[in-house]
Amino acid sequence: MVKVLRIFNITLIVLAFILLIMWVFSGSITGYFSYSLDSSEPRCLFISADGDSSEIEDIDLCCSEIQNLLVCEETDDSFDYICYNLKEGNNYYINSKTYNYCLKESYV
Image (cartoon, rainbow, N blue to C red; front, side, top):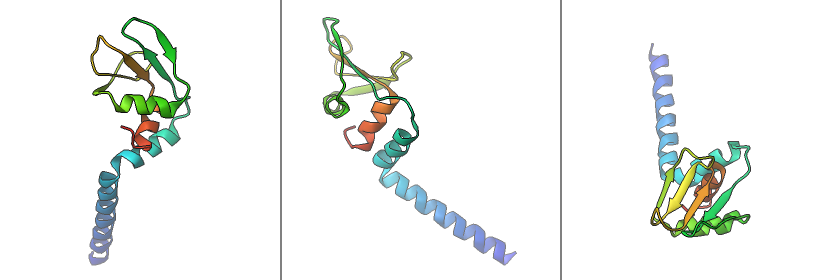
């Protein structure tokens, strides 16, 4: 019985340590694993307030642009997130792969 409790306590300590590390490095580690597991292609679509749209191929440029925006929220569109300052203004539509890349690289 004592041996079982000792193993249980050691397991809890290891689990607590892993959770602490995940909490401290939550953005980059979580983003890295999510990015690695996602097999889709990163996508970023810019839609101006006038309605003009263009696909942004450079994901680092996209991450840099959305870093300056106030809100990134989940959508039900073909893209997973919409990022904007004003809903009626310029919008960036990104998928989960792009969002997790930006998270992994500490843009978001």
